[in-house]
Image (cartoon, rainbow, N blue to C red):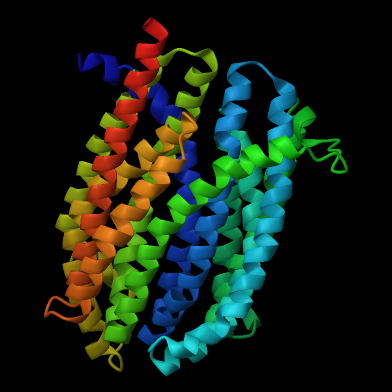
Length: 458
């Protein structure tokens, strides 16, 4: 019986690994910023964390919304319908561009909130100029997402990976030159990191468009758009899928953002520790995200073919593969929890030695908890991808809200601010919310697939 799952592992990984590398690339931008900025001090690291907390919320809405394009393209590809595939990309690109501009404007309007969130004042002053530039980078990032989701819906997962790798090279180079003022460039500190992020994201969207247009298979899809002809039915379909998907990602990212803000109330060291643990967890989470895209594409294809027994089997094969990989990541976090935080700080810095020692100790405790929620986090995002492949988005949105905000957040808030657990208490709430989400989403997938199979056999 287990063989029916394992025989799918190879193809699942072939489809998922470029997505995983591409998603890791997004996280590696933040990882590179954190590593380099961390050399400047814990206040600068906390400032990047605070600034990114606003951007991550907006990014979650943009990325979540763009995922509506993938199942529509995958279904059209499965049914060999080129017209619907091109229409999904065109309308998705329009909506993603408008959303990117809107989110940039909303973040600028929200800047004054930084001063009323009980965050350390030195951290707020450093965060504001960083936030302004990184917020603008949302416009090219969400445009990139439209092309990325189209490419993945066509089962071409390597192009987004190539674009993200190039973006990382650009980001790290500009960071090195502008954060530290190397080779005669001005020393801009964390503003230099923001410039690197902004430049790399413009290059990323330009490069993926170039790759898609160059390939004969995709050239008809990405050229000769008639933007004067916008169909309300297609717009409504993308919004119908995209808005709940955006909320699903928002509910999850928002609870992690709340953890950043709660940590800021505990002080800059708690906030810096939270940022380290969060960044490390984000990298392993991208493996689940990549497998979730594979689940969305493969389930979407089977839906187009109306092959519901294989749809269920293939979805479950990806769940099993995710479980096995996340157990490995959990073990790595347990073994390396004291060493991994030292990558982010200058442990030989005598001036900041006390702060750095405290940050490493707190981060090690958080990674102990993060080791256990690797499994829940991976499973929930992959099942969510499979549900999007079926184009079931409304009930999963309700499930994620209940799991994160009615179960997880109250635990984070109480145990973080009103008990001796402090930072560890915040992460206990995250673990509980992720576990609740994974269990409820799997029950939903099992119910729907059994229902589809039952209808087909009647």
